[in-house]
Amino acid sequence: MSDQYPSDWDSRRRRVYRRDGYQCQNCGAIGGKAGAAELHAHHGVPISKGGTHDLSNLTTYCKDCHNAIHHKNTYAPTATQHGQSYPSLTDQQASIFAIGLVSIFVLLALLLFTELMIFGYLLLALIFIFVAVLVLLEPIDYLNSSNI
Image (cartoon, rainbow, N blue to C red; front, top):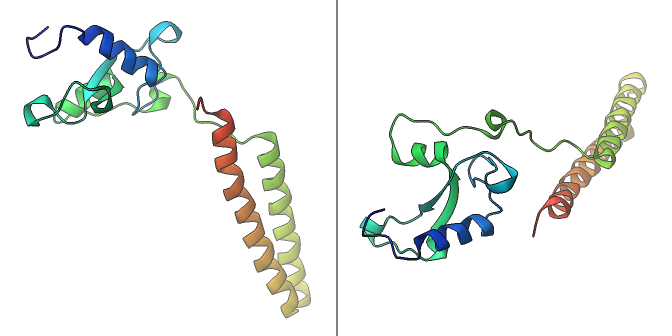
């Protein structure tokens, strides 16, 4: 290790890994005891440009993402390349989505067959409510699943 690192560097980087949940903050790769990714502590503001070794200037990245930051023509991996998948809809969200789609198609069919203007307004209202419910459920589901 270079002289530019403080004597307690290993302790600092381990604290950063722990703070970030032993997870790459770019692609989501898991390191530490729960995963196989090699983790690195990255300086957000480089030391050469006045950055510090403070925890607030350090972020956890896997080796591949860290290399992509520092080397041109190198690409960072995605979460799926690390064998992880993006979260799927909860059962509640899937049910609301299915009910919303069916309702929209029913109202659309009524609109086409009856040509009544009121069904057009109902369709627009239903679409608005459907989108609003999905938008509201997303942050709630995120908060419930996060390690905050």
